Length: 392
Image 1 (spheres, rainbow, N blue to C red):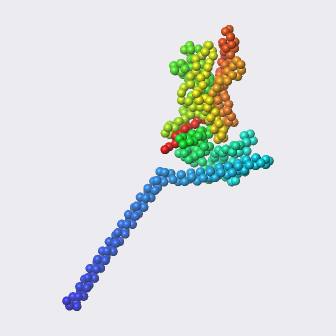
Image 2 (image 1 turned 45 degrees about the vertical axis):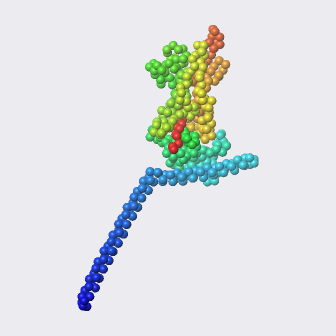
Image 3 (image 1 turned 180 degrees about the vertical axis):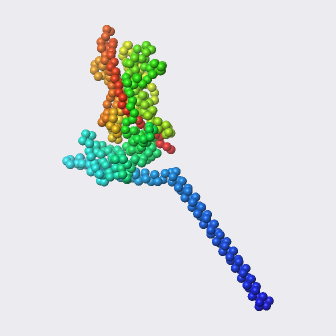
């Protein structure tokens, strides 16, 4: 091979090597581009999954709730420390003992009940009774202007809240979210009670005008226990209203809170006693002697009221009288008995509404032979309680 041929061969080899290197570079560049595209796609998928999870699980909402709850606990701790110092000052006989809460805007004491109202800058308002029990927070002036804001709490947050705290829920489905208070809570269920009164229920003689006495044979049979003559007079109607008062109050609460129907296994009752069975009146004895058969659990009638007092919520938010599902018959005088339904007054004290007064007098066959019934009645609102099972 001469010199010229060796030079051409070398040039040819260089060309081949050059083509080979270019192919390698192109191949290497292609792999890098595909990897970049795949990486972007994977990142997009992960981002979409993360966003979907955050939206589904409401992570942001939970984070806000956690911040709110931390603020509430800090405020309650400040109140507890302040009350401890106050109690110590009282024990040691300090004449100027007063409740001073760090971080609070104001601390005001009710001269009648001895309880305090503690307001913080974010609008959270707590009630502290004379024994140091704390309820709240509620909101002062709307949403409180930031910070801890329990007005954000809805029925979905119920498992996060403690007794005495507020949530907002349109229980009666009227388009307005009302305030509800966590009333009882344990491992199986949570009970909430309306802060304000709701509706208006007639009991006593007034109640009788709402019923179809002429066409409802079942109603007539239950009420015709006084004369048993196939007719129902006003006395028997009023007695019927008394006898079924607890059931009537509970049924009325159920009819108001239609929103509970959309919550699995939720039940509705009135504050006071709850009974699923119908109460029956014993037959008339000796022509006039009416006996009332008490509900089996009537001895527990003040359980709910005592809890309301402990939480500081016996007085309704709108300061109105309301029915409390309980009843009793008391002897007013030697010759008179009063049939009464329990209520709670506008100041939060237990009271009673008399539906019937029996006045006994001597007849031809002796004392109690005849009587006169004075009829009464009232129309006042109720405070429903909703029991919601804890979801597993």
